[in-house]
Length: 486
Image 1 (tube, rainbow, N blue to C red):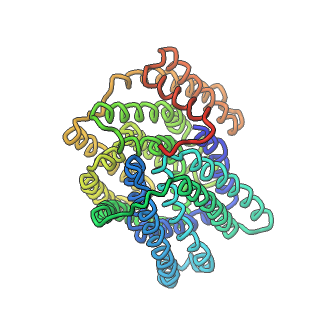
Image 2 (cartoon, one colour):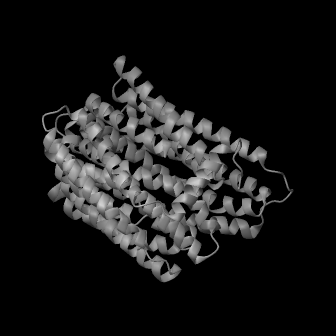
Image 3 (cartoon, rainbow, N blue to C red):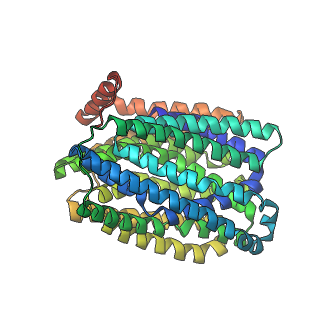
């Protein structure tokens, strides 16, 4: 939660700072380069990170330290080789990209620089998954939420001050990610040294499970590869590069409440693996969904009510074409967060083949929607596709969880969201009217006030038993000198 709060407080103003310095044009180019890096990372990633977080908790419970070491050797060895191959591929694609969109020619020299991000981000992503498998959430938060973001902010300011604009932001992103990777690597090494050598090693059956699970999860990741680049390149064709810059901002705002989901998933993923009964799993799922929505609802309401004012902070050209698209996209995010960690639940409980099917249907809908709607409606078309694909995926996953695991989405505890959410929405609307002529930066105070109102009203209804257990567990965790592997 501390990392979450820091990301919101520092990351949000930093995104505005970047947008105002780069403008929608340069930000759009960065968005195209960034989606290229992410796409190649997914293509060459082979689902390795998912394998680590799936099997490490299991081997820790069994004290099979030899199997853990063998797994990590294979995961990192394959990842390093594939990331270098991806680095070569992206540089070979430079002439094709430039010939497709001549306005990118001025940025051609930045593509090889941006490609350095591929191996760094792939290795960092796997390292985070490995530490999740060891239940070491604290180090992930420290490195990715605190160290990486602080370093990125400082370096960006320095590079902008000496005249490096887009190239400076790319360099800041690479260096901060590399430092994060170094810190994660040191943490993993300490974890391995802490494990007692038992002389065991992986066997053929274990390795077969790794590869089988990795293939399924790789299939899942491949399904998500085509969507982001397709929507951005179609948007360039239908509008211009600046429209992609506006889309980058909309996605950043969409992902702000998504941070709460990712933090909770980091905590509960290994717990889903370890839960032994349906009742324990259902309790974990409902508790996680409850926490996600309680934390995210004030922010979702704020983004919906103040959409145009928030976009105005980013500079000229964002409000005119982005307001409606942002509102529709945030509504889609509401659907995603209300379903909680449903996809993660299915993956961790051995229903990854079902999730592959769900993702296939969702991506097929998204790709078809992009091809049909984006050339006609532009940014609003992208937002409509987001709503459609998320709705289908989450509903399908909820039905699978109910049918396959006998776990329903609904819990009576969710009724307690209603009154705080309604009061908070009224508070935001009243403050919007009362402070209409105030500085746009005053909105930060409005959000803090609304967030406080939501949780004060919620707490007036009392703290349930599971929340008390969570608070006690956090207290015990921070009171211990050294975190246990278990």
